[in-house]
Length: 377
Image (cartoon, rainbow, N blue to C red; front, top):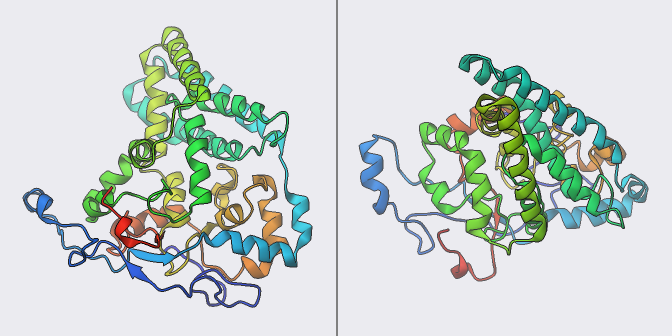
């Protein structure tokens, strides 16, 4: 596993270094002999044809907690470290790096318009994809109103997220904010946390080959899952998002041609799929450590992705901006230094593919009081 650990931990630790939140009864999902499980028969012929191992092994699909774990940590940490409140609040300086990224991508569209296809794909993966993934992480940051706050200038957060969205081509900034709020509010609740793969995903993508396919198409799967799993009404801002993106796409196509547009699309698809930066999607909430809902990553790629690797810190205090998350860790070391963490997103992706215990099925979930509510979705 791509994990490092200081001390001994099997879950979230309190200030005394002992596990506080994971004394819950553990149950499992997906067992083939369970009434709540998933039958393998409908797909057996298909996988047999591909000669893939389809044996259902679900003991690592953990029902690991009945309450969102970070809220209790937040209260306890603030009780011991009230000075952390001073870290809360927006940081509008994020406008500078995101503007540099957007303008750089537009310039690269001009430079790439007559390039060979090999050059285009290489540039999209190595450069354009890095810019686009960085902008995606900025959209996450801005989605928490961490650029202009929650007050009278809150709507500027939406405007800035539309600006960041431009090179990603697909209109997603506003929808992402809408559904990401549920990820924080209902972390680990299978039917409401849209970051949790569906049971169909967990069933289909267990072999290394199918997991590679899942990772490659992850941008598409991750984008459509919320609308299928927990749909919400369309908002006016989403319509504006779509109109703005459509205008941008037309302008890029008219000014720089089809290759420039393909460069942007490829950058988004490649960087959010099989890419070192995309390791953060896996590292954040998959069960690399039994009983731990969230893992942080501490490494140099945090500089590119607005400290998204400080994920325990972020879920504990989602209104602390990315620039102050390292200070949060420094102020409350007893709550973070003893937790297992990742130091390589590349290793995370490697383990996800080739470790038989990892895959879309190895995502921590909480359970509703009535387990009969759980359906294949």
